[in-house]
Image 1 (spheres, rainbow, N blue to C red):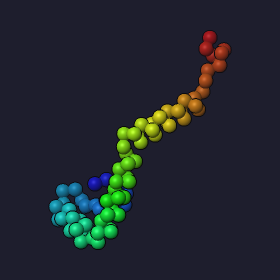
Image 2: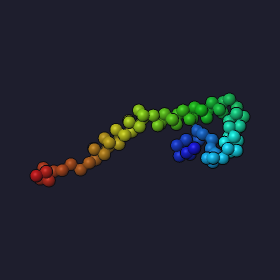
Image 3: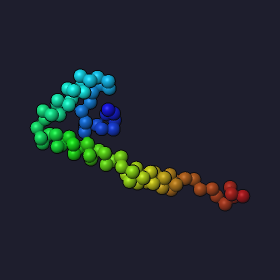
Image 4: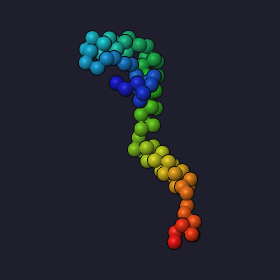
Length: 79
C-alpha cells in the first residue's frame, strides 16, 4: 500500500507480512458499519482524483498554464 496515494482512506501493513495483513482485515471486520462505510467512501473519493478524466483535466490545465506563461519571440528574434 502507498500512503501517499491513499492517505487516510486505507489501512496499512508491511508488504509481505501476512500477520499484519490479517490484523488489518480483522480490524476492518470489527469496525462498526458506519466506520467501514466511511472508510470505503473515503477510498472512492480518493480514487476519483485519479480517474482518466481528472488526470486529463489536470494535464490540460498545466499545459494551458505553461503555454500562457511561455516567452513569445519578438519579431526581430524570428528573423
